[in-house]
Image (cartoon, rainbow over all chains, first blue to last red; front, top):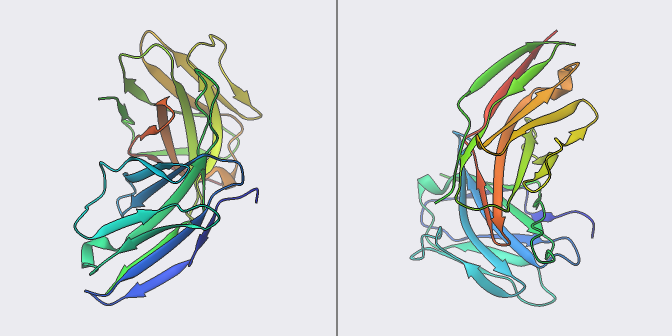
Length: 117
Length: 113
């Protein structure tokens, strides 16, 4: 597709429950990124993929967060045992593979708002 | 590490007037890309404009233009003839590697009728 799709739009989980978010990148884009945006609006980088390979996961709280991008499936971000502080909007973005020296803009999905109660 | 700084948490402009949003960045790279994104209340991130560091000419997209000062590591966004629909959070972003994007903290722009 021509847009990054994210599902669901909203997700409500009780503390301790699992949450799973999905992202379908733009067709032909090789890079996928996950960001967390909390109420103060700053973007926190979580993880990135080049195709199905993890490229950078330095932002992931690994004890509870995991992510995958498998061929022919939407990418996913899963939070085990959610905590109140996980409440945020989670954005997925995708980007083309640039030719040497070209780094393209990221196209963002509409986000998934996760509320942990 | 590269950092992006937006020193204006909030800005206000009268409809039809011009406003400039500031952004500075820190980098040791010579080749990189800079972007401005707009995030309206819907939270959708919309690309406003991009600038390649190797290009001296400032990018322009309709009412939006940038003032790119590479030596000063400054990348400001000018919005001319401001419209009510321009009200949003604006994020400056920097990218120097295929898998790296750094965002500023954002500037909230209010447009007064």
